[in-house]
Every structure is written in C-alpha cells, then in structure tokens.
Length: 283
Image 1 (cartoon, rainbow, N blue to C red):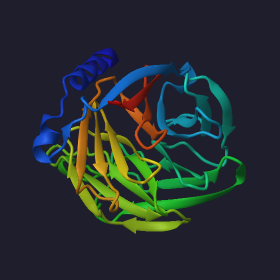
Image 2: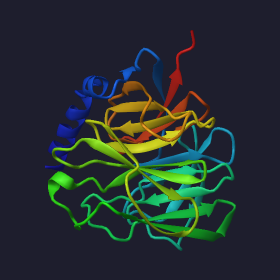
Image 3: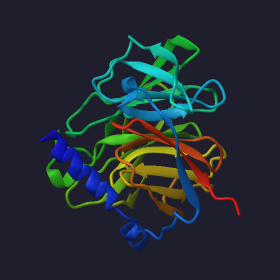
Image 4: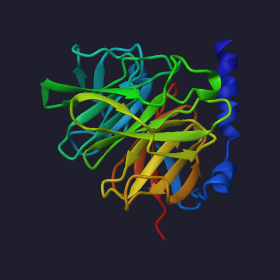
C-alpha cells in the first residue's frame, strides 16, 4: 500500500504544471529563466530533510529531518556530505518543517508541522549554532483557527515554510483544504514570546507549499511546492502583489530551499535525498 501511495504521489507531481498559477495569479513561465542541475546526494540519515539554511563555511548548509526524528541539525556541503552534527537535547522534534536564518547567524527551527490541524503546541526555536546554551521559544497560535481539527474544507493550519525578513518571521500555510486553494501568510516577531497571529495576505496555489526563502538582498521570495516553485518580487515589502515566475520542477517530495546568492538557490527532496542547484540562465 505504501508503494502504491508513493507511486500515485510521484505521478501527480510529474503531471503538475503552472497553468493554474499563471491563469489565477499572473506568473510567467520560469522554465525559460532558470535551469536545474543535480549536484549532491544526502546520506541515508538525512532522507527526511525538511529545511535548509546557509552553513558556517562556504558551500555548506544546515538541514534537519522532519517529525519524530532526533532533535539534531546537520551541516552538510554541497555534495551532501555531513560535516557537523549538532545535537539539541533541549528540544523535541515534534514536526520540524523548515529553517530560517537572520543576518546575525541565528537559526529559527520551525516546529510548525500540523498535518492533522490539531496541534496547540506550535513553536519556533531560535538558536545560534555557536552558542547552543542560549535559545528562545517563539510560540505561535492562529487567530483564525476555531476548531482542533477544523472541518476538511477549512484545514489550512499546517505550516512547512518559514522565512526571516526585517526582524520578523513569515509563515506560509500548507493548504490542505479541499475547496480553498489560497496559501495564507502570517508574521510574528523574531524574539521570544507567545503570539496569536491573523493572516496578513494570501495567494492561490494549486500545489501545497513545503518551504520558502528570501534572497539575501531582500528582493525575491520563493515558495517551494510539490512540483513547482513560485517567485515573488518583495522589494517593496513582504506580500504577494508582484508575482514573477512559476517554475515547474517535478523531482519528488521537495521540502527545503535556500538562496545562495540573490539569484541562485539549493533545494533538496525527501526520500531520494537529492540536492539540486537552481541557477538563473546567463545570457
């Protein structure tokens, strides 16, 4: 049964395209703008990789496994080889789903996975890899969630995509609603506290969002989904008002992405453990 479900998922991803996003939001085709190349292979211990951030050295990256795995961060190079393992026994990996990073080198581990839409213990762990004895908890609740779980048509309270931008953390919902395909955006401060947040923007996406990042210059937001990437111009602020490109990329269960400069990025997929480089084509 597991193999049958995985085969059906793989087929659905392979058949996805950008037609609905182009029609409903106004994206242009990104496949003529970017090229994707496989560059590395993660080891078996990272076959549930679900977040990426820049590492401490050139060509290295922080990543982690998702829920019910050890509370550990792995620093890997761009070939997928593990350089460092940070054990974090002070935390529990209930459902870690993404990594964000600020300009001071702090990492934000988003324990916001909520497949059943019934968690009440959502938290983002703020740590610095060089000062592991100091950490903060940023606790999150959704003001628009009234039931745990809500009816299937209202299941939009899973979050697997988090970015840091101008002293705030932005959260993007992995929409499981059977009728409403809008991805919601929330914002919380990047410091310890308990916050109840309401959506500040939303955008249509037929595919579910699994990761996100912002370019170092703060001008481009990318949302990663199963089967495609959605790019937005956020140079005038974090919102969905200026869609740029929809890039089809059907390579399995892609769940982590990070910009390595203002145009190029690395992404990884679960199960296969592959690393890909996305580069803007140079004319």
